[in-house]
Image 1: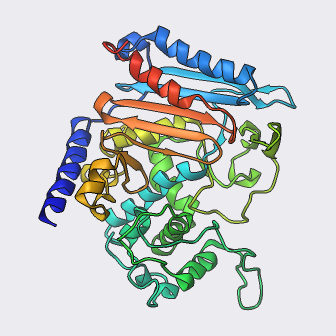
Image 2: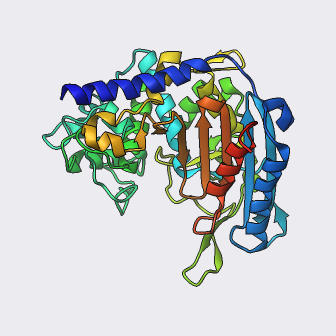
Length: 397
């Protein structure tokens, strides 16, 4: 047990130290690869990977963004936003971010923790009475943030949703559905195992609404997006939520078993759920999401606006799940979960979304890499692209 604690502390200390190296207020500006110690030729090779993927119909379209030392050295749009209409992908195309929503939700919870309105170690039952039972009573906010709640709830929400009635005049809504999760409870004791949980993050969204007294998207906009200048970031893919920008969104293409692309969602289609959720639902651009990532690299500040304390950023990007593993398991484990981020042993934190978006933040190299598609099920060369981005750093070619 003592050895296990020492190993966990070493891992945490390592992650903390990396974040501290880059805790300065750097804003994103366009730059040349050479200005950031990178090879433009190698980065262009990475772009050609995606041009080939689109030409081969492996993907419909992509927006790529690479930033190092605050310089955006690559920002390219390739392929189609809406092939049937002949609309090309553009650098300011807006994407359904799916689970790339989770870092924003974890940021919202952490803001409330800094405000003293909740604590990571609070039991959820303190705020949501349906969690006050023997199955859910020990679930803490920390467990929800790190996917260690013990929830084994498969669907994003139970079906059918609770509908409007005299008993539930405001249905359907997020809190009513989250209350059902509390009634189901944990399948394993909280804090003893990791299992990725959309139910857990939707519970966090309900907590934000309860504690802040605001709708989820309003709180996030006022406390994160407006201060950071994320002008194209929203929740819920309906026209009235998007300030007239619905047509800037990409079609989401899905690949059939026969290998054919179908339109899984297009601008104007109804959203999957009739209310804002927290497991997904974020709408954003590569430029906006890069700002969120840069805020984390800066230790919680961007362009003079402090969103989080530096120590909070360290906590969120540290391996919060490390303590559930034995020393032998820790040696084999290469990836952990922080608060809203996947965290690697190398200090890189990242997240992806099921509609095709992916983000990596590398504090060692002060690097942000975004690969945004809306082509789930396609053959995506993003792993090779990441290798080329790393190779483009001076001295690695």
